[in-house]
Length: 118
Image (tube, rainbow, N blue to C red; front, top):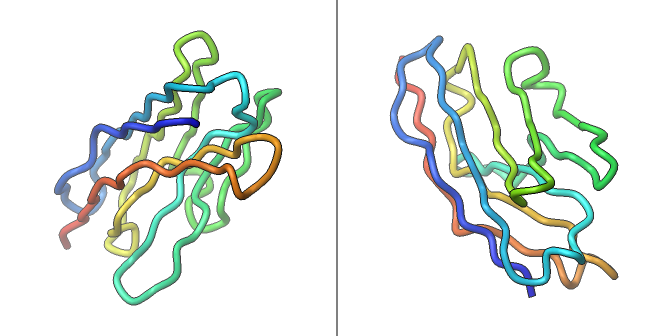
């Protein structure tokens, strides 16, 4: 099994920045992609950004140019630098790991709240 522990998040003003971090432990050799999802109130959970096992990065269109995802393969961590935050970025952010051999093995963090105040 893979365990994910997030840190960061909080309350920030419009245009501000926050950084989220996630540390993976357990069967880390089985991790494929690591990344972030978010869920706004009343909305479905959506992918924000992720990094594959070969360091390919994928971003949601809504955050391109503002957020940067990075993965430290030596430390088994993934971070999300969020700049130029908007009220619509508010939500619970979850760290996620694609765990081999398939989706039924995927891991989720406990979630961290990000609130952007206008």
